Length: 150
Image 1: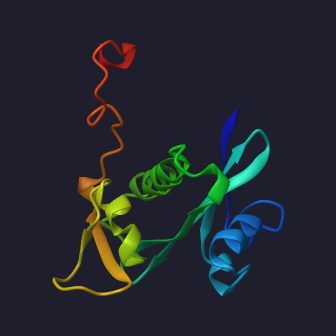
Image 2: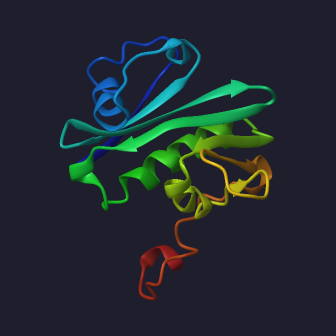
């Protein structure tokens, strides 16, 4: 079973978010954890994906979105990103921003985030207007017989 869980700013993350962050990014708790909401996705009770969102400089920022290597290609990163965007949308975000390694910018572009400036940079700063957040999963789906399309 797949489950998502939110952790409020300053909450203990040692049994959930931090193992994912350590495995994917090689680092653990930091000062931003006291200011961030963290989302964690569980696969049969095991934390396998995580990300966080915080408010800074008139925008919601996303960061540390990662999935354990052995659980990639199961759309769990997409789920974490959608959870974070939902949190921003539910708080009337005017803008969502993130810094992405160049090699993963395409992943975020699929949800509408676009590079802030022209040219090649690494990391790539990306942004999405809050009014453009679209969490409809059916738009890109090729299924024609899905009951959700009725």
